[in-house]
Length: 115
Length: 115
Image (cartoon, rainbow over all chains, first blue to last red):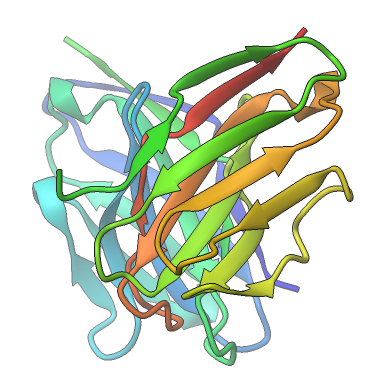
């Protein structure tokens, strides 16, 4: 069974500082990898995903993530935090061998941006 | 609207009551997923539909939970004899095809509180 670990349930950064949210997965075969963002009282929105090809993936709102097979990681970064980035972020995986997309989510990281 | 909608947005039930939660997916989306998100946790898979067929219900926590999608569009998640541990946000997501790696589009969720 696949699992996802997000280090740090809460992360605080100053406005303009680097954002780094960590995600590690456990799977015998590298899965499809996703980052979703959830704003209060809203559903999840896809930030970016890795399926194949280039390991550095760029997403919406200036976020990017790099798939590192050797480290089984898919950390999310943004060079300069904005107040509007305050939200909860979920890393997720989907088994490549499955016929459909059964997604396993991490427990989430709440990002606080300090003015 | 073009997105996934869910109703009601909030539901308060007394323990033992039955509840029905509705999901309207994006028009034309073949796949529909239900997730349960407990407080402070990531979403957990409940069940999956491809058109009207329920192909995976392995995540339903007990036989009190029942989901249907009779015409391959709107879906209803029913919980019978609600218990306090059923309190959570129930998320619905749809996907154009639903293959592994596809993006899922999430609704805003229904927050169920069982007293």
